[in-house]
Image (cartoon, rainbow, N blue to C red):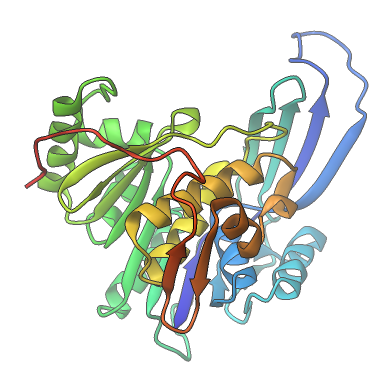
Length: 324
């Protein structure tokens, strides 16, 4: 199985403080971490570490930060043959300030205003994963690979992202995007309202949607029923990349044909583990996730055996009504 990941990498600079900053104050910096980042990068690295054949494409500046990202991707088993280097702009930088009292992060991004220019590859991907940060590259892939399955991470409200989502097979959306798409509120305590919410999505978009709710969990559909899986409780050190890790693990489940409930448990557990560390090193091993869930994935036929159905909080079948 061939996987193409399209996005725009960032060079992450993580700064930690013992408490939330007060405007105009002076603060002593005690910790600083530098590493690659971006939702597409997290997805690519997670999939490669979990044994998948992953090729990454995106634009990097021809600077030391860009070279470090490329080298680190290669060291993690990701094919970087189709990364493009730009000699006129510097690699995008994401400054991340983490409040150590609760793990909450605040981000400031300097984005390189350059997109992919070359769209030819020496393989035909079975799956294309996109985070919407390179719309030109994403649209080219949609046009060039009509038989591929497309998975999109929709974590911002954007017209270009919406246009891309209409042509995808799967979409992982945050609540802001989902509410902007449907022009409806998420009434989590009303089953019928959630059914209507997903029915509205289905009326607008052919893709299968998953809606992430941060610390509240995740909403999804299975066999025309809306389900909610609560978030896994964890000691939060840095919440920056939980959504990106969830996305990568979700992609793994989809591409390996795993049961939806199992896929959501794997993705949710992976996201929870990722919040216990800083940056790209927070991506868990597949074995670690499976051990927590008491499941075994047999890679030859993608069968999953669940040893203990009480290993994690069970999902909730919310409605009696069905999504048509």
